[in-house]
Length: 550
Ligand code: HEM
Image (cartoon, rainbow, N blue to C red; front, side, top):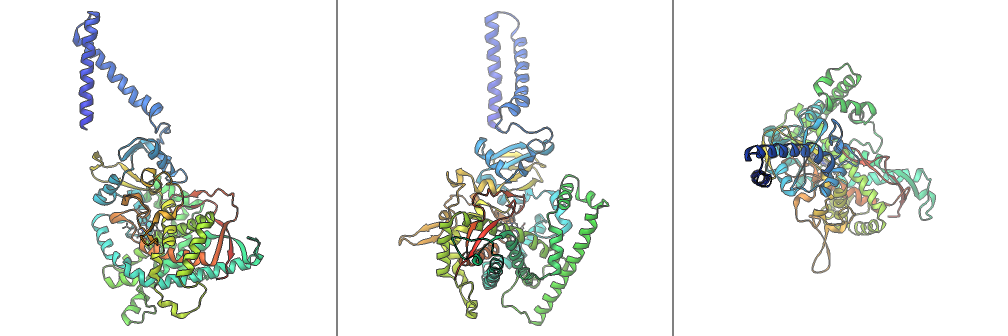
């Protein structure tokens, strides 16, 4: 602000000096008349420059469309890539201003300092867009993802104990059992659809598999584990809760149009329309709520009678035991966890296998590491349940591969916040109504934070070598800022399930790499990340898998 004031003063002085000079050169007209003429000329030139010349011809962001501005930037694929280009090319001090759809004010946040203000220091000044919350509320009620301010603080405080390190540690054997089932069923598919050969392996040992389908099923089953109910989708069980959930979240053309209408019009207006999707959604939600109620009742009975079948404390039991949630609030939280944890983990696992298929050397090193340190995923040894799976957290290559994939392919590449009250950001006043854009995709690939090789897959970023020459896990990726890695965001609204997701991914990847050698089915395929939430390969990920004799 100070520099703007001094620039105006300087410009005014300049105009006065020019008026004086002209007056003395031509000896005509009064100083005041010349000054006023010059000032008008300057103002007109300035306006033409600001309104026409700069935005349309000179600005690095020139090219915005009529009425759309640069609003489509958030939807260009891969989502977040346009923001990454702007961060590279538009000089900025932590914020890039642009015009969204219908010229709405948008600020892209680019520096760790500004990110810390949005995500941590003044979280509740920057809230999830109301229209998105209203839409999600139709499905998730007042679940953790949707609520704001005091209610969010209350829920977060009471849900967090269900995601502590100790709780996740107890779940490791269950995750491992699921990982074993996963490699078994994928192995059966490889054995039963012998189409391809790999390195001259016998045909029945190698076949092409679309890995996303399996990743989706194992991730749903694992979320089930969080709520104390293994849905067994891997075993093709037709759990009615899952059947309804899948119908609700299936990205059909009609569902996508429905979502768009909700975002452009208002969820209240769209739900009042005589559209069959509305009736269908109501029916599905009624079914889901009744299944969740059944789940909660059974869990409550188990807890009261002390007949809990499993030795681990699932998230739902812990929420019930906290006595802070009514039954209908528990239903909201169950659905929230399913929606938040299913596609995100599915997408990340898919990208891990993609990167391993593209980097056979890293794949082999990882295989060596996990086979040396973890039990065999095909073993039926019952004592395995006592194995200390914490060791998986200390395996440098496993940790490096998972973190590096999470960095390069964040499941949520772009997220938005609305400024709900006038506030400050990066030293600037920001009025209410401005929309803030945070792009994990762009920040995670920013060369100023990650170096010139930011776009490369380098698990070694996450590995230190100690004095004895041993590899050690490093959890910063070698950067100097916490805010360089935004996959789970940071602060009070960061992903509450990140420890859960990382633990699950580690064991799934370990079991998978131990059992299969992966190659791209078509080594020349250009795999396109697609989607705005839970980005996945556009046409699925087709891998050629060879079963290994573990
Ligand atoms: C690789 C997997 C995952 C990724 C990349 C991920 C990423 C994220 C991100 C970026 C957010 C913040 C979104 C925003 O505010 O705009 C978030 C929130 C959340 N995530 Fe995750 N997530 C993952 C897995 C999970 C899992 C497995 C669970 C539950 C079991 C979960 C539960 C949640 C919940 C409840 C929130 C809302 C937190 C709040 O607002 O306080 N997530 N996640």
